[in-house]
Structure formats: C-alpha cells, structure tokens
Amino acid sequence: ETGVTQSPTHLIKTRGQQVTLRCSSQSGHNTVSWYQQALGQGPQFIFQYYREEENGRGNFPPRFSGLQFPNYSSELNVNALELDDSALYLCASSKRDPGGNEQFFGPGTRLTVL
Amino acid sequence: QKEVEQDPGPLSVPEGAIVSLNCTYSNSAFQYFMWYRQYSRKGPELLMYTYSSGNKEDGRFTAQVDKSSKYISLFIRDSQPSDSATYLCAISQGAQKLVFGQGTRLTINP
Image (tube, rainbow over all chains, first blue to last red; front, side, top):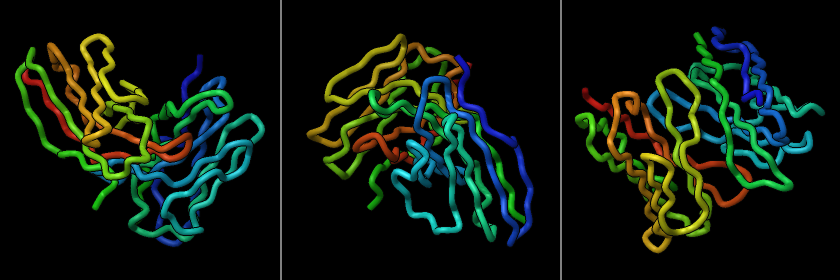
C-alpha cells in the first residue's frame, strides 16, 4: 500500500510569485485535505477536495486554490505569495463513502517566501 | 478562545515514565478525536482515533475522551527515547476539517 506523497520537498519563492504544490493520495482514498503548519503551531485547515469539488474551506483567502484530479491526486496553488505564507504545507488523504475521518498525512512541502 | 487548547510544553521526562498529554475543546459538536505524533520536519503520523467517550488502548498508548468535560488525554506507558516528538491532538465534527491543538513537544531522556 502506497502512502501519501508530496512534491516538491522544499521550495523557495519570492514575494508576489505563484507556487503549485502536489499531492498523491494513499491507495484506496478518495478525499484530499490541505493544511498549513507554521513553525511551532498545529496545522490549520485550508480546504478539502472530494469528487473533484471543493468540500469545505478554512479561513484562507481566495489566492489559495486547489484541484483534485480523477485519480484523486491534488494540487494546491498559491498566488501573490506573501512572507507569511512561509510554512510547511501538508496534504492528508482519507476515505469517504464509506469511511470515517481518519486522515493520513504526507511528509509535507516546506515553502520559504523571501 | 481557541477551539482546541493544548499546552505546548516543552515536557521532559525520564525513560520509562508514564506520560500524560491533554487537550480541552470548546465545541460540544466535536465527535471524532485523534492523536498524531510528529517528528521534526516530518508529516504528522496518526496514533489514535476514537469517536466515543471512554478509553482506547493500543500497545503502550491509551487515548481517553471525556465528552462531558470536553477533555481528551493520551497516556504513554514505559516511555522510550524514540517517543520524543511533538504530539498533536486533533478534533473534528465530521468528515471535513480537523482542528488541531498547538502540539506538545515531548522529550524522553535516556
């Protein structure tokens, strides 16, 4: 069974640029959630994708957007990067219909905005 | 007031000690309770998952949920240096977002 994978591992961008992060869900899972984790803090929910539609969103501005593909993989896009966007971005996959809410995380992408 | 409160520590105990980690929450609609372990610069790893009041045991780990007090705990018996990590509680109402505590940084000293 393949776990959740994310790419790239690290990324350095400058303020104002755009970035795309990628996530492959665990085998058998159909739902992907994205979280932002600032240093020393718990992860904060950005949004969730289920059946290729956004299915819930946290308190993040519209410049954070995403996609889910038919194979359940997902992308997180962030436009107009700000210094405060520097964080570890985590992807979690889970299984719905049927299933509960056990979310399994990938290793994360560490984004640094200069 | 934060939805989930967790003492950030740091917490340092000797090897073999019993460790108690705790979180409180404010919304009685929460019904799923999880504990994650996160090593430095890694993604969180799911340790325990429960959706009812009471205890759940898995090896050296016991998760306890008290919905009447809105209080959850994780106990680690016979703690090992390899248990040194940040422990995150996470709570949810349903299949969508997890609400995390700040995380408690734990060090087990040999």
